[in-house]
Amino acid sequence: MSRSAERALASQSLMDVGKSTWRDYYEITKPGINKSNLLATFTGFWLASGFQHFDFLNLLWTLLGTALVIAGGCVLNNFYDRDIDPKMNRTETRAVPEGRIKPIVALWYGIFLSLAGFIVLGVLVNAVAAFLGFVGFFVYVMIYTMWLKRTSVWNTVVGGVSGAVPPMIGWVAVTGRIDLTAWALFLVLFMWQPPHFFALAMRRVEEYRAAGIPMLPVIKGFAETKIQTLLFTLLLLPSSLLLFFTGASGWVYLTAATILGVVYIILSIKGFYAKDDIAWAKMMFIYSLIYLMGILLVIVIDKGITSFN
Picture 1 (cartoon, one colour):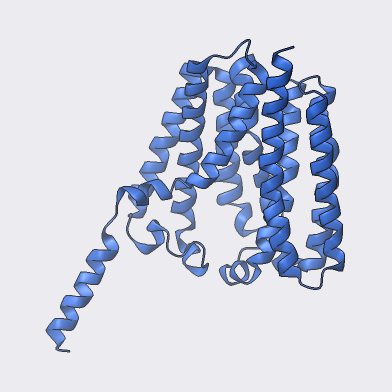
Picture 2 (cartoon, rainbow, N blue to C red):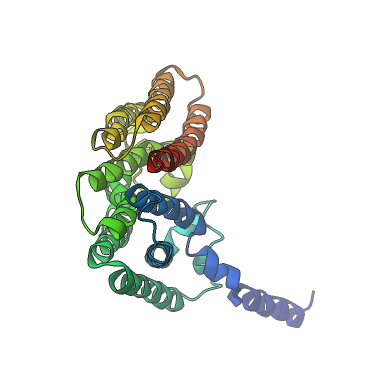
């Protein structure tokens, strides 16, 4: 190949890398994370309203505002992590580190989405919802992404605050107050997250090690990670039952939450006897998703049943 042809090929490659599509701008908002958080937001909203006080327009603004705040935070996470994302298989093809979206564009894109979300929540929902949205955003971007993710094994535990806020936003969108039920919703999502992310970290331990991210399995090893996983699954069970004792959920929820929680604990205990740690971590990761979908779904179903009574 001639030098001129090589230069033309290199130039074309750079042009290809620089091209972005609407899908790139969609993907850096982490739609998978957004969808699961919006389901949690809807669950909190539905639990507070039921059929009697259901306001579709209020729900629409609540979901839109929450989605924008989460999207903005995720874009800023992509912007800030552009130096370490290329070191991990699951993040190396993101649009910012590959150059399809310029960092400065990602920065302003994230700021715009976040501000739009705060405005929607503050103006069209209520001030408490906007405050909670800001708390979740601040913890995810400032505390987790810009500080703890790179410095502490407690990164995902503290960062779990941001993931536990969405159902609270849904609840306060209807009630306008942070009460005991709001905190019960918070605890379910907060206690769920460490076992979920510990399992993911075990599966991707070498990638996190290569990227220099101090996840618990990287720093403390698998044995300590299993202990912490069991601890949080044990705490998750009574935390999830609080919704019954606050009167927000009924017996259908109590029964299902108990079963889901006990199964989670049993699977956690099995980790101490697992011959294949990665296979066990994969099983725990899959069950964590089943648990989350199951607990949110049963809250919705239980509320639907009690709304008719």
